[in-house]
Length: 320
Length: 256
Image 1: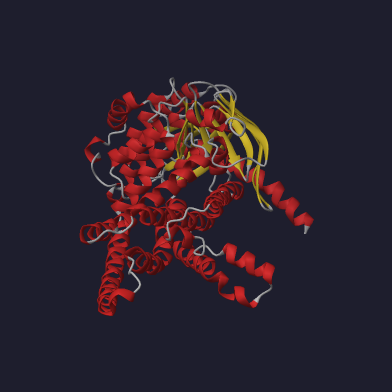
Image 2: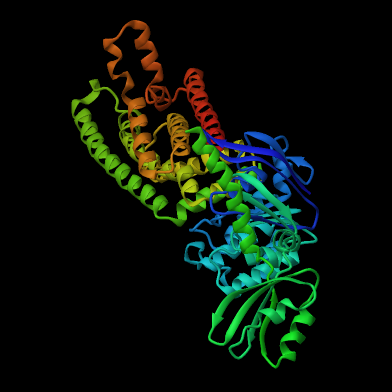
């Protein structure tokens, strides 16, 4: 549905996006993840036809965004970082204007506006001026504007920014419900959002794609060390030797001590959770915690973005 | 076409939702009314004097001695007011980010620019429409010729169109409305007075300067003459202004 090929964007001497390529299949939700200034917004602006790329091509629903901009735009809904609202207009007037310029057929305008307002929960502010809306409502009116013409592709730049937790939840549910009929690309720097809503993640840093995968695969691939964390109340004694004695365990180290409670990191081959548990409980100790030490997406993100930055920084200093 | 009208409608609603339209129309009405009133007093005294002279006195002409000077004097108001109308057309959209909505909707640049131009023109026409009251009073009191009045309105519309196309261009170049209004005002003023130095330069330059002066071309219109020379000047001026605006918007897009 969306295809981006070797996209590069330069602002004068600054390269905002460099050789970015990815594909999004129909019905997918793609998360666009990266620190601020990584090039997320630039990539999205190119996809929506707001600005042209310096090099490379982008296709939306089969249309090249620079060669057939109108066809591509007709099939794209876009929520920019700041919702593009006219402060003097009421929400209803604003959506009526959007429906007109987005080419919604005249006979359908009224029903589509009403349906979209209901879907985004903004019916109660329909007659209020956009200038008087709270941040949460502005965001939702912006989302309504993007959905209005029932586009194939939705591009959402930080759709949950500035919302309260309840609204964030609602918005995520809405986005999930939209997938299937629509193909969604959303950018964010909130990591749980990605693991909760997206089918696939593109991690971008300093204008380059550093990782593309499903959130689960990324977690497994980069964090799947097979290590366990155990917290044991052994009444003062050291549980280390006992844990080492469990078949399959290759390494045990103490990572935290709080009085009689000691936390261990246990490396092993294969799943040894049952054996570890019975070994501890068999001694009459208290097993307070036992969990796999998988890296959270957050840690992966940090790892991926800093790893990438390090050699580049080295190269920069070499140039100087 | 419906896209252009949608933009025009939005622009016009924008003017009337803010105080701009009311201030602009109200103060133009006030100033034109004052000019008109003082000219009526003057015209009145003059015709009394002429009557006193008896048969040899030249006939007084309400078109030449009242309507024409009233419009020409009140034109100075446009110099101040039109920059205020055009200043926000693009600057405001850029500042508030709504330009992203327009540029990512299935609209061509031509449609957006034409829509904005027509929106500003409509407000300008509404300002001019206020003067219809005064003209109607003259028709009630006397028998002015209506053809020069029509051509005067046509000329004023065309001249305003030139100012608005320049204003649009300048607004498309900046985010800052104060900058937009100041630059637009200066350009207008220059176009207005550029032929002041005409008599001090060589014959060719003189012709060029006279031709460039935006107000010079209005003269024939106020006398009831529609000369193609002036029509071509105004229409090509407007087209060129809008064309440059389209280029500016496109360039802005590349710069991001």
